Length: 335
Ligand code: P6P
Image (cartoon, rainbow, N blue to C red; front, side, top):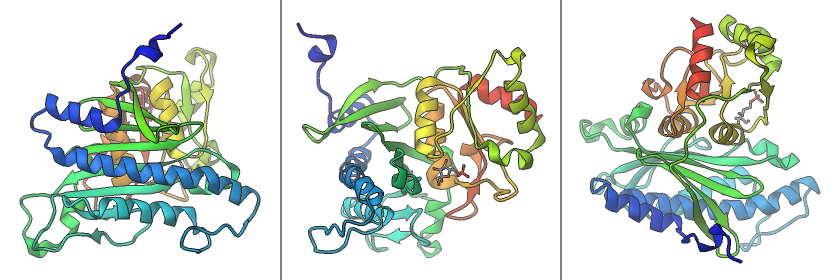
């Protein structure tokens, strides 16, 4: 007997991106070329993630890679993999990584490229030692056309999130799931290890508009803004209808659950991180783009996070992201 899934066509991410292109003539082949490079890089990263956990949990097995080198720190492997997969896609001119202080310029001024790709190659990698899901987050900006050559790379990187032309994440969980948007909805794929390809499973992901789930590290409660403390106190009352708390401590995992199940994720300003802990350019902006494209919302507890003007590559921001009505409720308490 065949189930519906057995008869559903198999759509790989490359096919899907091409179909997106046909539907939106303005989307040139460029984005599909970048997204397929990211799909390749994350397929390689997931193969390391799947075995690195074993290495970390059992201590060092002295495992060597093909070059005969000891397996390096996983973040570095992920970072190098993305750089190598994207550097030869001739439209990518600049890459910004959480792992590197400065941007990597992959094109000379003579052939400057057209896009900046910003990424956190492996967010939450401290969790790998205890086998908790971790993820890769990416954001794509088009070069600004109003910046003289002499200004260098930074102006093409320090753009507000509303300028993103694509964004997404990969969560290396019980399965490897990739979600991306180019501004026409959120599309989600699962890596089928038997064929080594990402296969479409949800076209047009919608975030539930409500969700009685909040995700926050309440250890910092005393240093949260008063409005956040008031909201968290309200959520524990009968009147709220009873909220649950889920906090994995891995941003991509906490966000992925919020996207699918609804609710709200909060990383407010704290005494330790008064400007917030999460990074604006390659964590908050890409996840904020995904959240809004799925019908949710993303704020920095003051305003829309995608409208913030970044002042530095590794700028941090507070983040309030999730179901629209839940985010609005927190903002009500903030007011
Ligand atoms: P805290 C992981 O280190 C990370 O950058 C995010 O993935 C996660 O959401 C956050 O930090 C957790 O921070 O302060 O709750 O441990």
